[in-house]
Length: 240
Ligand SMILES: Cc1cc2nc3c(=O)[nH]c(=O)nc-3n(C[C@H](O)[C@H](O)[C@H](O)COP(=O)(O)O)c2cc1C
Image (cartoon, rainbow, N blue to C red):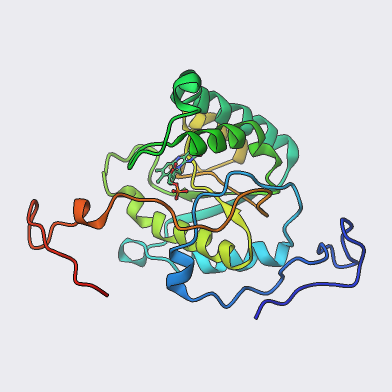
């Protein structure tokens, strides 16, 4: 059962810095329900996230898997407005190059089984314009990764990243795994003071959702992506 903080004026933080009505204890959400109801959340409010909650998310993240349990990671938390503003501009540049240039084509696109729908594009466009307003950013960072050509490199951190995002969900906090700052990876690494051999693996903006719902992410049907026993071998899914 979620613990909700009450007893101070709406819109103003309580003495402990927590906003009234905000969940400070996680929802006891069944794992599968969480997995089926955690889409990317790109409309985020700038309402602060209590620091204790940020620590709880990081504690859930580091329970995730890494090759040989090496945990060659670091988790850089950014709340400083000037840092978010600078990196936010680099993120926007990446978004414009990748998607913004196709704004007219993408913004009203109807649902497609893969790729961005019009709604996802508009949400992505909104996030690009407002990413610096998300109260907390987390950069998962991997050591010995700056010059790596290992195609499996990310497997030692993205499981943990997903745990962070699902833990956030339990606290009613939305997130999106983003990477479009990478065009300025060296600039970001310098600004964050990363070791020479490290690189950022994502930028995860966290915030309480300002719009939208916790709905099941749309995906291609299982029948089109499952190969049972070998590639191209189909199998009928039994009725549940
Ligand atoms: C490697 C990777 C990079 C991504 N980069 C971005 C990004 O830079 N910006 C963004 O808005 N979403 C980014 N996403 C999120 C995807 O767009 C999102 O997972 C996809 O649209 C499905 O969203 P849904 O879970 O809400 O259906 C990225 C996801 C992955 C796995």
